[in-house]
Amino acid sequence: MKAPFYFFLSALLIAVSCQAKSFGQIAGKVAEIEVSASLSGLDVFNNIYVIDPDNRIVKFSSHGIKQHFYSNNRLGAPSGFDLSNPHKIALFYPDFQTVVFLDRNLTYTSSQELSALSLPESRAIGMTNDNNLWVFNEFENVLKRIVPGGGVETVSENSWSIWGKNIRPTHLVERFNRVYLSDPEKGIFIFTNLGS
Image (tube, rainbow, N blue to C red):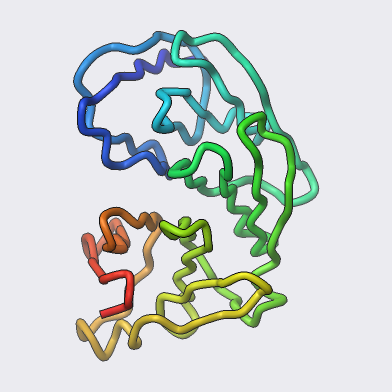
């Protein structure tokens, strides 16, 4: 069954990354499209992105016109994407611990296998302000940054030593030199972009 999604424009659109049907702040109607989707979000140009039942990421213009799509059936279902830079979209496939990078036309540009960087059990990814990649490694309970050339920097201490609990974030986003991790059961955890 298709469910209508209403997309809205906000004067202060802060959260442009999306996972699990979360949206940025909403103020006025942009476009109305009818689509079945497991994930949806807006970029800074108010383009609409959805993950459809066929596990494709589909891009609609701010007027609701279907523009592009990307499909990769070899990697399973994507669990999230980061739209903070619409020219470098990160699409996360947790079954194969792979992040696929797409351009503004949803054309494949590159990918990164997190398991090749000794990052098993990663659940949440997000782009850094300088177009690198944040990864929360659930196995070690630490926030890590992947830098050019595949280098990995541990940015935070173990979440158990900081807050006295292990966290399982499903969403990660960097805004204004802060990294926000959302754990549906334990709340939102905030790091500086230096990991403290």
